[in-house]
Structure formats: structure tokens, C-alpha cells
Length: 113
Length: 113
Image (tube, rainbow over all chains, first blue to last red; front, side, top):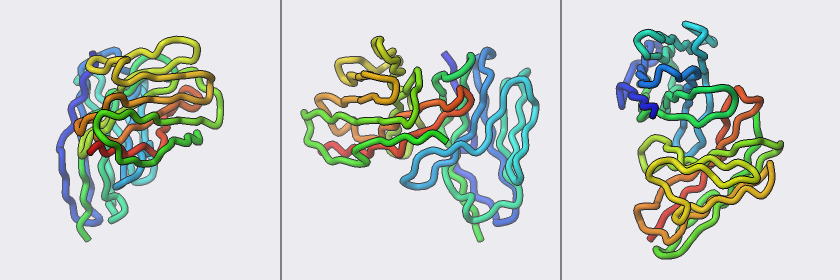
């Protein structure tokens, strides 16, 4: 089955700098790659996603890139702010419509003021 | 976004007892997903619940331990049976809205003593 590896497990950056989190997946059939942000004590919230027919997607300060050949995708956060501090999870899914998600191990991002 | 109401939000239970978690969605969905998030860990799928059929369990999870009901297209329950301290986790239900995005309930934080 699918396996998703996420790195780093913790990341600390200065406010205003950029943060990059990377994930690799094993199943070439995976075609949907969401990123979730989970603040302490709260549910995971989708922040951005990408499908396999697209190489890059951007939403304000957040971007995701996908390399299907290498089977890896990355989350980029620019101009980081203290409220970006949270745990971020990547995930992979396959097929059409509602499918199970396989999650990476998570990255605890800390933004230092 | 999908409105998912999950309860209880938290509970402290004695070992050997069972807890049933409820998940109510504001619209009809074919599949509902139950995930477990152990302390400080990522999300792992327990099972997929389809209305009118038996749930499909992931490797490592069995029906006797985690029985699931899905009586209609907006409701599901997950029971954690014969609990031990190792079952202390956050349990989350999830649905997809429009087959394009997965949403999570607020989670049930279970502590087994």
C-alpha cells in the first residue's frame, strides 16, 4: 500500500523567512496530495492541495509543488508569521472522489518572532 | 465547508469498558472515514464506513475492537471496545465534500485509565 514520508519532523524559522516541508510517496497511482494544518487541540484543516495533472499551485503565501517522476511534493510558506506555527501534515490519495488519505508523520513548525 | 458534529469531544474511561463516538454530517455522503491520532502522532485510518454495508477495516484494526455502524447517509458511530490505556488517542471522523476535499470532525479525545 501507499507510504508517505515527511521531513523534517520539526522546523524552526525566523518570522519573515520561508519554510519548506517535503514529502515523498511510494504509490505511483496516487493522484491527490493535500496539506493539512493542525493547531494545538484542534482538527486538521486543509490549507492547500494539488492533483497529479498540475506541477505547482499557489495561494497567497502558500505554495505546493509536485514532482511525479520523483514522487515527491513540497509545501512552501513564504513571509512566515507567528500564526503559521502549527503541525503540518501531508497526505496522499488515489482514485476519483472520496478516498482514504495516507498521512505523513507531520512537521511541527515554530515561527520565532 | 462540511459541517461535521462529533461527540463526545472528550472522555475519560476505565479500562475494560467501551465508548461509542458519534459523527453527524450536515449532508448525505456515501463514505465516512474514521481515523485515529495517537498522542503526538499522525493520523491513521481505522476504517471506511459505507451506508448499508459492512465497514472496511485497515490492516491492524479489527471489527471486534472497533465496531462501526452506518445507519444512514448522514450518521456513523465508532465504538472502542474493551479499552486499554493504549487506546488513549484522538478519534476523528472525516467526510469529503463534493468529492474534492476531505473535512474532519473536531475529534474525540479519549483517555483510558
